[in-house]
Image (tube, rainbow, N blue to C red):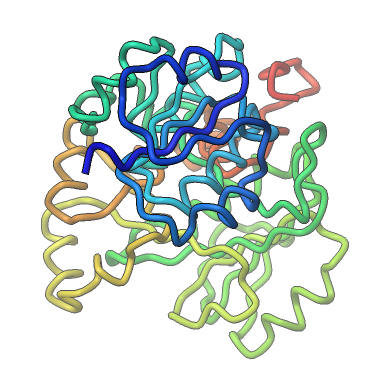
Length: 331
């Protein structure tokens, strides 16, 4: 098993060539994820050791996200370069969020990681669940490295536990995004938006959603409060769980396979009192992966840093009140 390793190298070709490990295939150059898929999708290997500079546009975390989606993240060992971007807390935390736990700048550690792969516990210190470092999943057709998203994103929010806060969260996210994006927020098959007294919020039936999205094609973002399992027309869905014991029990009693159905989907803990250790236990017991953890927030406050961080995790580069110069590093 240990002899079936693959090396993909570029800047660190010499170091990796001289590494005392058994290798079945070694390629050198700069490759897109698609090119690597063509070569290795049906190729059996134990570990794929990647010199990160061999990945085209590797500083764009979305490229690494694509790598983690198309290959078994547990088999990837990343040899990082010394760039500021790759070694930033944000980038490293996003690697952990993707399930890439084996990364190092030390060539000698590569050999160690082959036989002693990291678990989440080994890299948990890099993971900032309440910070700016949750994994983004970007649609390349509407993403520009300099300006962020430039097309329309339709993002749905659905409560999995009873009263998990989708309506209030959509309302607050609209307030935050409206400072820098053209945004609409709409609830489907509900009337709760009327309670906010905000005439910019819309309420429609599920049969009207596709038409609504078409009518607002000039908007950069449409946030949808989903009150059913019908996600037609919604490009992304975020599943909200309020992790209280009674609410979790009710959810599981309703559907014992709920977490199996959520495999690979964005799970957000909302109105959460969990800390990082609690979240680790939650993930272990449920067999799921938490995308982001949002504590209780005051819905009368219009600027929450945790919500700005959540939006950055979703890939929105323009967050905060930029007229005041806040978060200018993310422009």
